[in-house]
Image 1 (cartoon, helix red, strand yellow):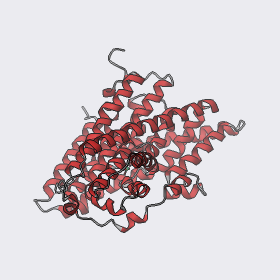
Image 2 (tube, protein in one colour):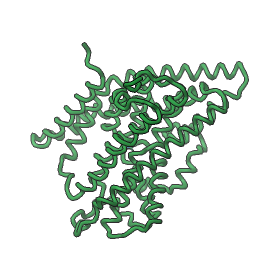
Image 3 (cartoon, protein in one colour):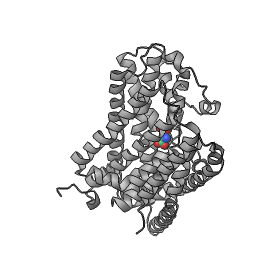
Image 4 (cartoon, protein in one colour):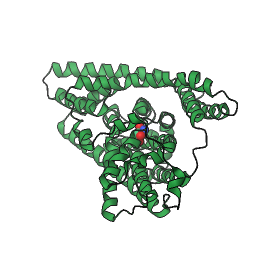
Length: 416
Ligand code: ASP
C-alpha cells in the first residue's frame, strides 16, 4: 500500500528537522545549505510558478459560476465578515495574554536582548498603510501579474469575472468555458507539483534548522510562548468552536482533510505558496465546491491572517513593555485596529508580518528599531502563524460552504 501524502510529508518534516539538527555538531551545514536546500528552492519556485495563473483562473471561474450579482454580494459579505471577525478574535486573544503574562516586563531585559540590526532591504519594503490599500487597484493588471502582486491581481480578476457574467452570449459562454478550462489545467498541474511536497518540506526544514539551531530560545522564550499559546488557543479552541457550533462540522475531520496543506504552510511560512495545496485539500478532501473554494481561498490567503494579526498585536505590546512604555486603553485600541489592518495588508510570504509591525509601532509612537528585538525568533513564529493563517482560511471555506447549503459529508459531525 502506498503511504498517504500527509504521512509522507510528516516524515519529510521530521527527517528534515533531524538532518538539520545533526548537521551542526557533525559539521555538514554547508552541504545542507548548499545542496539539500536546492531541493527546497526548486519546490518553492514550482509553487510560485503556478500561483498567478491559478489565482487568476480560479477566481474568474469561481465568480462566473456564482452567477447572479445577488449571490456574489452574499458570498462576498459572508467571506469578509468571517475574515474580520476571526482576525479580531485572534487579536483579542493575543492582547489578553500579553497583558496577563507581560513577557516584556523584566528588569534588564532590554540590555540582555541588545539589538539586531534590521536588514536594510527589509526596512526598504516598509510602505505606508495607505499605499498598501490604494495599491489594491492596479494601474496596470499585467504589471501586477508580472510582479506577482496578489491583491491587485485578485481585484482585477473579481471585476473581470463579474463582467463576464454581464456579457451577452456567445461571448459569456466562450469566456466562461475558456477560464474553466484553464482552471482545470492549473488544478492538474498543481496536483502534479503537490506530489513533490515531502521532498520540498524535508529540504526546507533541514535548511532552516541547520541555519538557526536551537540557540534562539533565550531571553525571548516567554514572548515566544505567549505568541505560541495565543496561536494554539485560536487554532484549537476558537476556530473549532465556530466550526462545530455554526457549521456543525467536525473539527478533527477538517484537520485531517487539511493536514498536508498545514504542514506545507509550516515549512514554507507562506500562505500564498501553500494556496495550491489548500485549494486541493478543500475541494478533494473536504468536498467543498469549486465555486466556493475558488472565491474564498485566494482572497483568504492574502487578506485573512488570524495568526499574523495575533502576532502583530503581541509583538507590538512586547516591544512597548521592553521599552517600559505603558500604553493607554486608547493606544491599545489603536494597536488592535492597526494589527487588523497590518494583517490584511501583509502579503502571504515569509516575514511579511515582521515588516508590518512597523505600521503599528508608528501608529502608537513606539521606536521602530524595536523590530530588531524580535528579529532573531521571527522564523519559527512565522512558521506557526502561517499555519494558523491557512487553518483559518480553510475553516472559513468550510463554514461558508455549509451556510450555502453544501453537504460536506466528509466533514460531518459524529452524530449526523
Ligand atoms: N508568512 C505569513 C504568511 O504567509 C505572513 C506573515 O509573515 O505573517 O501567511
